[in-house]
Length: 312
Image 1 (cartoon, rainbow, N blue to C red):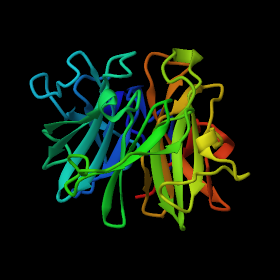
Image 2 (spheres, rainbow, N blue to C red):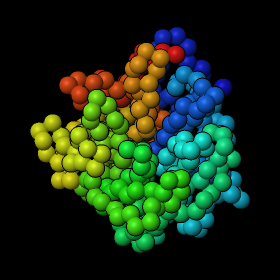
Image 3 (tube, helix red, strand yellow):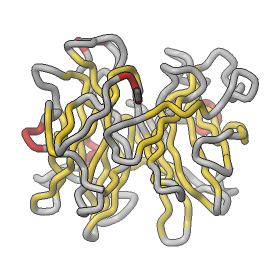
Image 4 (cartoon, rainbow, N blue to C red):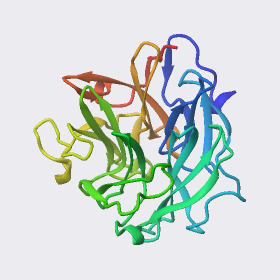
């Protein structure tokens, strides 16, 4: 039985798609045709799940073991992974932090030949006190114009910096630049129709049914902004549009994944939420992203309880 619930069949699915804690999901379609999803280590050492249809998931292992896990923050947890395929290998960026360790937390990187690992740690890119950005976690990798960049940040501003050609270190001499204000964490940027869309999360992630986490977005004509809301106000000033809010079944709806497409060209996004029926941890959610006037939205603005499934 995959991922703690019966196999979903037919033309519809129900949220959550995984009914145990898989916070801060990141997803990639691998060369074998499967999707692989990675999450914050509520399952120790960074869990890896696999699916063919985005609905039915099986746990296939972890990115690390107790012996191979990163060590630069010795008592730290591995949070908010970001999976990519770079130069012919799988590159997993991760955050490492203890609660409250805003100056010692940081971002590292690991590599593997296969999406299921094993991943070999390449060490840290930087800690907060080395790059002078408090709470340096929640990284996102993107390529643009033949260059590689890392975006990151958590309620102390969102920032970007250029990486080396292999993506495993900062480019020598690169300078960080701020791209959004202090309301946000969990940044993800999606390119579509000449716009860059900066998705992020606001509010509290981890207070159970009191969590206020909400997924928001702004858009820009340039990768580095300014990212604006529909009224032209800047995310540097903490303005945005809400994409996914709470409803009677799910709260704390945030930290979205990359957008992936099904065979019909429909866009889908994963995120986590706290379930009223199962409030322990943050369960894995899936919803279709729709577009109107080049702005993304979720039907009803809150998690679906039952919906038409992706088509493959």
